[in-house]
Length: 173
Image (cartoon, rainbow, N blue to C red; front, side):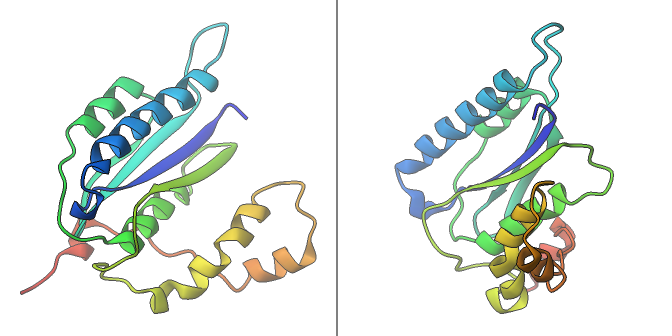
């Protein structure tokens, strides 16, 4: 596959401590590796796109899917730590980016860098529990070679959540 879409969901919470710089370093390396391994060897054209969702207490920053590795690296460099961990909100936002019907990609992936469990999301595991449980079924179904009827059956039970916007994530005091 050379035309892939990947969303990095990056935990930028305070609990990372000194590992925050490592997360930034690995995220930048990841975007560069994706770009290097999915470019057209003849023309050098990039066929992959990487997007980023950065979360701590809330979804603090989103960068849309882009083939521009230097722009992604600059975005990652600009990230600052927040307090808590809104893991579910971050994952649902990333999945929403990947399920955009206008996105043209042969493969799609969600990669999450986190050190812990959710303690700040507006959505809850009970709200999206069946979705997170069934995520493996969706991944298996995305392969055209998947002929497993049990996997196809499970897909019918899973509802893809709508993307979370900053407006939806606003908290009122």
